Picture (cartoon, helix red, strand yellow):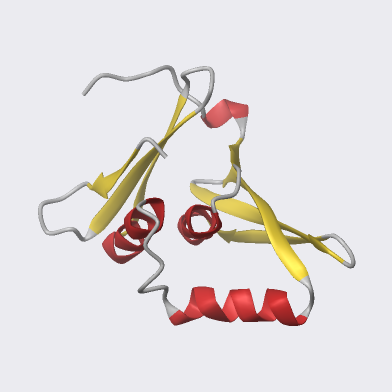
Length: 126
């Protein structure tokens, strides 16, 4: 992740920028500032305050011997959604989840976050 922050001065709306190896970027906003704070702490390798919903997912995966291996972000109408790819005794794909939570899980577990090519943009200067 290239950048995680907020759109507004009150930290209500989060935003992030992913940067690919080819220099192309993916910009995402319109998600809660709370999720942005979690993503930021995960990127900084701090797992001290992992929200209970993410811990619940971790426990479910452990009980079923599954590991989250990648996240894929895509557009569904006007919103961004994500598929979560898990592997273990069998492969499993959880479809159509909130992109912001999927990004947070990707940051927490330091796994690949894939984005559809149509969502990538050339580098933009602020």
